[in-house]
Image (cartoon, rainbow, N blue to C red):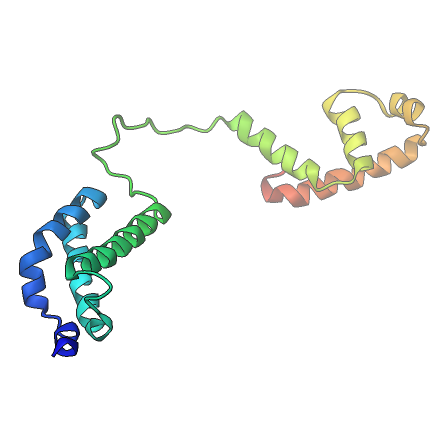
Length: 171
């Protein structure tokens, strides 16, 4: 007879006896009424599914249900921590003004990106002659590279930059 008493789990009686305290526990931990109700419902579903494994020798029904609910609350909190909170219009204090792009900044960024695609030698010639206003002769004296080679590097460097910048490049 004792074995039969251990095997029976009545979900209705357990819910009537412990449903409110389980809900209070879940609501206190989660802070969301709907999530707490789902947690309590899932607690009783899991308890009902594993009712054959319940033994009163290991603890009361209340203890068993709280253990299940605690695991569900932990899972819900971990799941919530993985998801970012959606932005809500009510949480935004002020609307931002539309950003107007400064054309000079956009042009400089495009220039830097296209310069990054070039070799060091091509960048060196373009920077010294086009951007800093130096002459080929001055650069030749500094680097020891013939003027004709520097002019060739300039040509191919600018050609690569035009390709990188697209059709709206340096024309």
